[in-house]
Length: 258
Image: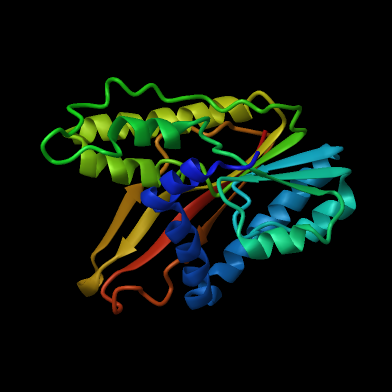
């Protein structure tokens, strides 16, 4: 799937290009804090492949391939589909060297981005969306058999930019936003449960503030499947402190094969 120019303008106005660039910029600054997380993600994915021995693998949220052992995966399966809303030029270049890898640009929320933009994108403070009741969270559908599905650090990220826009363009309250997030996460898991799947996701953010004050904020609002294999770890995503060492963030991460 190739996005139309009008759809790419929506992505630009909602901040997807800046968001994607921000991920790699943060990685370059915080690299030491990401190494352990990367290694655990890659090892867990290889365990899932060894267990399932799939002929085909579909990755939802392939991003910059930082947590994906792409070369090793290509050695162990017949076909790999990498799906993300935008593929960076560097990823396109790398994938072109691997014959088994196919890139697909698609909205893994099933159309949430366009729906939210049409409902609220052109609104002003004079005609804000009164509530989120009119928004029905779409479900993602794969156009083909995806084989083994890997949801890679995307479950709690699907909501981020649509939610940011709605907070600016609507009068919805926090309960509505909470239900909006929960519905997105439920639909993503609903899709994964249709196939043999692997999910790696943050479940909570651990915030450290000056004076030793700590806070744990849940990012996962649904229950993950028990699965046949599960691992958990902490991801020091903000080891250096982005706001002049006044605040540090880490994430609790869960990985499940089901």
